[in-house]
Amino acid sequence: MQTIVLKNLNLNNTSPITITVIIPCYNSKSTIAKCLESIFYQTELPDEIILIDDNSNDKTLSQIELSKEKSPITIKTLKNDENKGPGYCRNKGWEAAESTYIAFLDSDDVWVKDKIKIQKKLLTKLNYPEILGATCNLKKKYTNKIYKVSISKLLWKNPFCTSTVLLKKAINHRFENNYYSEDFMLWAKIISENNSSYFGDVLLAKPIDKRGLSRNNTQMYKGEIEVIKFISSKKNRILFLPSYLWVTLKFIKRALGF
Image (cartoon, rainbow, N blue to C red):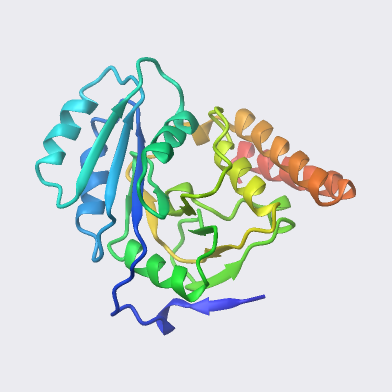
């Protein structure tokens, strides 16, 4: 397994890679300013930000306009006439993006200050993979190692926090218009075609508040089962049963509070 330790990376040189940040927003008035500030204060800035307002009924758009006045980079705002969900919003921003890579950030998450700089260096070091992301787990200690991701690995766990992921703009797959596991399904589809993918055991993003969608344990469970059905159909159908049992056990433990 290929591993890279972040402390061995040279972070001093600039990179020609361009990055568009896509942020779906729905009733995000209380968090969107902090979310955007975490981009504004990056040690290396992305090239543009695209915000997609998903027909919010609070003052999200007003707060975005206030934040735009502080922005050191271009911000585009798109608006849906009805609520479409985060997958639809990310696809809409993806189509409007003008960079070589797409970065995703949820409106209730923030980035650590070196997120862009670290990932640009890794993209070059890893020969420009289709997907680069980091762990979803918040913990006290990280190994800071980068690992190659295979389709088999996804049968047991989604290693990517969506707010850490960079994707090549040129990828043809898109998010499904679901509210649960649409991101996990996208990673699976891309990696199933033998596209290169890496994730790091490193803190690159964290939530501002407690998450909302992830609290719906039943829907998240159903979404993950659909993903492992897809993966096992591509890899080996025999793998479905042990993966199904593992995911089921994981969600039972989560429901019971373990």
